[in-house]
Image 1 (cartoon, helix red, strand yellow):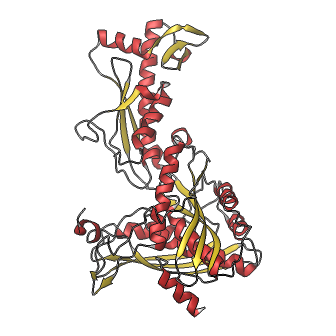
Image 2 (cartoon, helix red, strand yellow; image 1 turned 30 degrees about the vertical axis):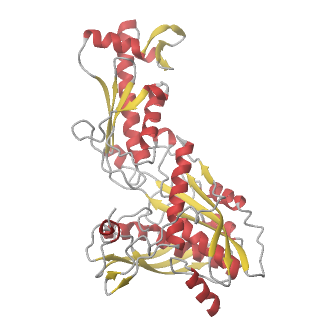
Length: 478
């Protein structure tokens, strides 16, 4: 990609977050005041939406009875800022998760226990008024803390000192989005999915095929995508492939399409067998009478009979985003966290990641390996934001707009010990309980690293990226 495409188009939002948090002596949160200032550049682009999402999550994943949060999208003479993974949440998460550690230290309470005491739980109301559902925070936090043995802190005295940190996050998914899908039966008994969700390496096509196969009751190898996708002449409408929404929104559409097609097969088989479709079952690609498994047809046999007498396509349609779906206001919350162990060189200020554990509530992990890959990739972007990436300006012009001067995380920056934890709190409206998780680790990574650095050397770094120069400056001023 050219320099102009990467650095002079849409960038991430530089921001300033001011926050005050009030709590009782027992650690119960009572109030929060937050002011968010996001630099959106010369043109608004998607900036107002980014600031809106960040502001509504400024309470974090915690019960906070009194909150005032004001977000400002500010026009400047810099390149436009817009949507990026995390959608403005990493900036505010650094503030509220630093506050949680500061509060725990002030009150003499374990940082994990303080978080758990205040967590939003099933049925609680978020400050926006939305009822919480599928929020497995406590299980996730306890597992994250256990993975790095957070309770076993070792204070070093030499040149290199180690510290541990933890953080969690919350992010809203997109509202009022629509997805439509079709599933077609082929003459050979296989099935084809028509979906406009864009496969860009995240594994969306694999997950959609798994959802269709599970609903139809056939092996995964019997389901494929059309070769031309997405193609507006062939594939139905999808709002976007962003915001970690595909598994939930398009997944629901695919499942409904597969269910619609299955019902057509059941009706066809019921006519052939002269029984009610209610008395039929589907298993391993075969439709049979309940209590009489030998009496039935395979999908392939039914398709052959259909196409021998009828040239019409055998296809099912599914839609997500109708008025009934819209009653939920917000499809789902992204629930995640991160725990790290770092080593800080007190002579150079260099920060080395020894271990990073990314975690997420998947609802239901339809494909655990792909889920782990999403969380690991998400956390790697968080490493870049925490330790490396900074676009610098003089008089509104970028002065480090090249990959030579704007470093991205490489294999040298990613720890060898890099596990992923998945918890499953099924979502009642998700396909088989699943929901999105592709932005569940990133917002927590900078905060966890900042908390670990404080644990190691006793200085709070409140500006990203946490460069060696900033660490040394903080140590000097300590």
